[in-house]
Length: 50
Image (tube, rainbow, N blue to C red; front, side, top):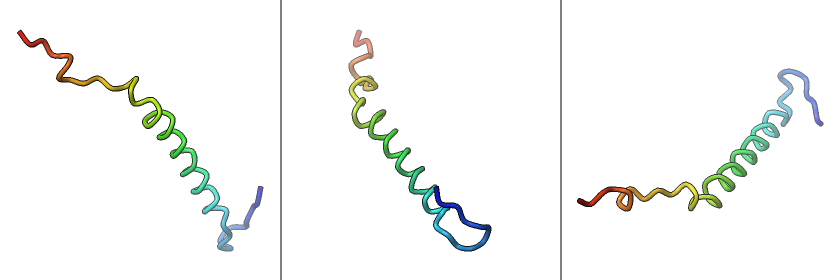
């Protein structure tokens, strides 16, 4: 792991941001994109018509 001293302008902060972005992307992909059918509840099919 690369460490930087305070205020030297190293890319430690950018690395953390990129890691966080990767984690968010993974959660979105797994929970929303790949599993959308399990979460889909079409309201128009759940209402009683009569």
